[in-house]
Length: 308
Image: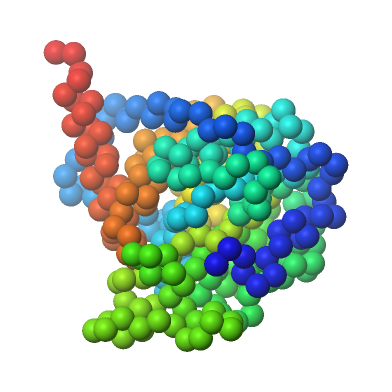
């Protein structure tokens, strides 16, 4: 399912896109070197508990569903920003995605990630939802997004960056829709499992991400920092109202830009655990286990390579 009955992001953006302002990916470069793990890393059960708290705070899946990830290739576009800023951001988000096995479509593709820059973020968010409501919430199911309250917060919140994810439940092994779609009959059945959208064989796949950057609120942030932040919220369902002050994460960049270089080891472990997990539904406990294992392996690697 490439678009959700009237997605047409280009139409929703037409009123706000300046001539020549929409950019799409150029050639993807090699992934950057990961940020080193912290000098002191808690271990054993303490680490697992801390990671579980991190995942519980940061993850924002669709209610009653698992954590979504990209399965289709990324097609990233920006609006209302000069090419000199747009292209490095697009290339960096694509590069981070590629480091987790994602493919990136050629320039001219139909965007499934749209990053819009504006000095009127709340007004633009409200205008886009009013102009193209089914680009954000479709009428025939409640299983694709975080709901009407979250959408109201998307429009009204005061934040440097706001985002809206839409995902769809799919069969983990083949990516076909696991819910009834208009004109395509009922949900599929799996012998012994009942309707698959109630069982583990289902995964959750991103369909699109809409991101709005308030240019008035990102002053003082370096472009690489912003690009890393945008990469994280593009590739994972992040709670826009999470309190991350206790953790080492790029999500703190607007609170303390001088102390945040970019994606942290925890951020990278979070994304790696998400994209390297089994092809079925991922819940918070699965994700916490994956992140913990990644951090422990990195700690062991650094210990093994450290000078005596």
